[in-house]
Each structure stands twice: as structure tokens, then as C-alpha cells.
Length: 470
Image (cartoon, rainbow, N blue to C red):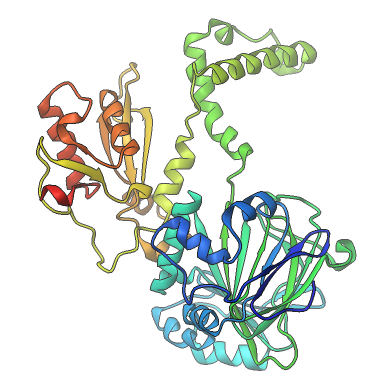
């Protein structure tokens, strides 16, 4: 990488030195613009445009944006500082669950966690005396500004966005060379950190992995991040980072996304239900396998050909629109696990007047709503009845975001939504596809059905009457 230049953004490539320098008289806004999900992401990668980022860098190669704007550096520092740990520890943090204390020693990760709750004085002692890195998990649970940022990014990407804060004292390294299964955005908040990136041994990796020094070769990128800088690299990129000598400490925020969001993951999600549905109408798929097949009595070539024929048939039906991929489980997992909408108030309640037939209405929190068509789980007879589920994240718990839960009953309580007959699907899609419409325009057979659906959505805080009607 070339040396940093004031008020410039250097664009690194996986092929060696920077291939482009974006000239700018100012490096960007003093804070991220959260008016819309798109504007927030644009301000995150400023001065680069989104089209260039996604065509040239996303899932392809690293990007280093250098910023020398004091206002940007000051804003980044406000997101989290080492000094914030004292107040955060008062929330009853636990080792392992909420944070790790670790250090890279001779190329291996050494975990220095204690047992139980975190004592700030002991944590501070380990940081300064043992030169240990503090890895703080999911700080958006405690910092409102990070909640605001990550909620918008989850709307932008349409998948979960997690975060970690890493605090490392000078001349120290927390983790050995490794790669991740997520797209990574590094925001340097305090101090400086030296990053070395290496060619992936597993491009677009599906899981976390360690790589010993002798296997990774020479670094393709060797950069120093300063406060206000941003570094992006794709999943699978091998990396390691250390705080240089002469720098008191480094604090950086890692934003991560696109875990388990590949085409392969989608196929794993949609194939079971697609095959089941096709079996209902295709008698050839209901014919029995050859005798003794499970005993391995030959016929593997014939079996492979027959399965290939079935798959080609599925492909033809997909391409013609005769069947549609329905990623039910991925959608459910996202909407029930993501952050709730950022709001100053703790509870989201129905907004404005109760809708009437003449009123123009629109969806609220549109990016927090997912609709799926699934079998009605309450039916116990043999007939399969399809219904529409309108799922949302309005009452998700920010405090457990990306932390998981070991209590199945607690997990079920988080799942919020409404169930409608399949006959309501067209009207629900109307609301999704237009900015606003009158209740009477809903494609339902009766005025009573229109009012009832509008009222159900309004009661769930998913619908509001447009202000020009009030």
C-alpha cells in the first residue's frame, strides 16, 4: 500500500499495491447518515460510490479508506472507547459470553478469561500488565448509536449484522492469523493498528479457520489504520493485526455480515419444501427406488442418471415459474433474530387513528416485515392448509441480539407476527408493493374483510393512516 495522503481514500487490491486513489477535499460527513439504509451505507464507504464498491470489491478484494477528517475521527471515537468498559462492566458482563481476554503468543491464541462475572479492575489489570486484548461481543446491546447503525445495515443487507470491539495495548496482538465466514468492515476508533492481509486459502469461506504462518506466504496488504479509517475485506481473507510500538492502545469496531448467505445456503433452505411440493404432482417422483438400493447392491450409475433427470425437471419448472423457491426458514431466522427498529421509546405502539375504508394507509417498518406462505401448523388432520404468515421484528429484544438463547420457550416468545388465510396474500402484497393505498382498494372479497385485515395490521403496529388523511 502507498503511504497515506491527506484527504484521500486509497483503494487496495488483492494483487498488490493500491490501484486507485480517490481525491477528496473532505473525507466525508462528521457522522454516518442514517436517514435511510442506503444513505447510511453510502456514508460508511464515502467517498467511494456503492456501484463501484459492489462491482469491484464486494466478495472480491480488500478496500482501505484513509480519512484525515478530525470530525470523522471524533465521531468514530464516540461509538466506543476503552474508557467505556468501566460503565459497561456494570451491566453484569460474563467471561466467554460477553467478552474474551486473549493474547497471541508464538502464533497461538492464549485465552486469559476468568470464571463468572467480569470485574473491571481485574480486566483493566490484565489489559495493562499482561498486554491482553479485550474482545467485547455485540456492543450494540449497550450503545444506542451502534444499535441505530446496525439496525439500518440489517435493512440494507437484508441479513444479520453483528459487531465486536477489540481493544489492544501497544506492541501486542490478540489473535493469530485466521479467516472468517463473514464480510468484514473495520472501523478504527482509537489509536492505530497494523493490519496484514493474505490471499485466501479458502475463498469465500463457510466457516472460521486458523492458518499457521508458514502456510500464508507474504502479505498482500500491510496497512496502518488510524482513527476514522475503514478497512473492508471479504470472508476467507486471512488476516492478523497488532498495535504498533509508540501507540498507547488501539480500539476498533468490527462490523460483520453475510454469514450463511450464499446460494448454497438458499438451496439447502428451499429444496426440501420444493421437492415435497413437486412429489404431490409428479407421480414419477413417488415411484419406488430399486430393490436393495439401500444395501448398496449396484445401480449407482442408473440412480445418478435418474436423480439428474429429476433435477433437470425441477430446473425447468423453476425457470418457467411453475414452482417458486420459498426460503421460509432463512426468512424466519432473520426476522426473529435481528435488531428491532431503532426508536427512542422502548415500546412500539399503534400509530394514529384506527383505519377506515376511505383512509389511505401504508405499512410501517416495511424493512422489518417478512411474509411467508406455509402450512398451517395448527391443523392436525391430513389435509394441508396453506396460510400467510406476516412476521416482524418490532418486539425483538435488543439485549440478546446475536447472542442466541438456550431456552426454546424464550426463543418462541421472540417470534412475532400474524396469520392470514391464503386468500389475503394478494392484498398483503399490494401493501408491500405500493407506497400507500386506500383500505377499500385492497383486493379482498368484502369491505368487512378489508377492514379486519387493516385493523389486524394496525393493532400489530404494522400499518398507519397517512397523515394527509388525518
